[in-house]
Image 1 (cartoon, rainbow, N blue to C red):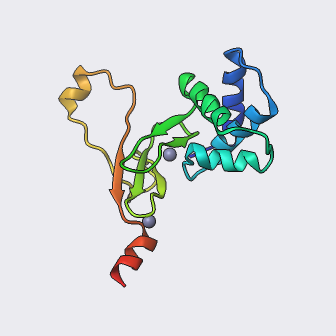
Image 2: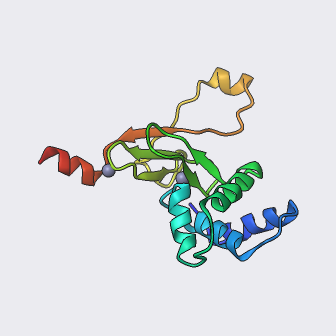
Length: 151
Ligand SMILES: [Zn+2]
Ligand SMILES: [Zn+2]
């Protein structure tokens, strides 16, 4: 669901809001735009640190806060585990493994794939309410964790 232009989209929005583009900021944005595994702030920090060893975790948090403010990153606050971040802000749902906390994207409406789950919205509510987005989380056990449990 993350297209190749996602990095450019975020960078343009950041510039539009008047934020300067430091090399560290660029790297944080790049990681968030390209990651498909919904990293935590600490995950992002570890990756930026390998390129810019002097960066602080606080800098990572500040940049994520800025991206949240301009709606270019999405927060996934699920049970127990650390807050995770998604550089893909297009409407999509998540499936979260209860055991290893892996988070996978799930396109809810996709006609090309019959196996996708559809979310039912009461037509009356749909008519009366102006729905601007959704945030759906499914929980379960991924294949790896399922196999471990049954052994
Ligand atoms: Zn798992
Ligand atoms: Zn996602």
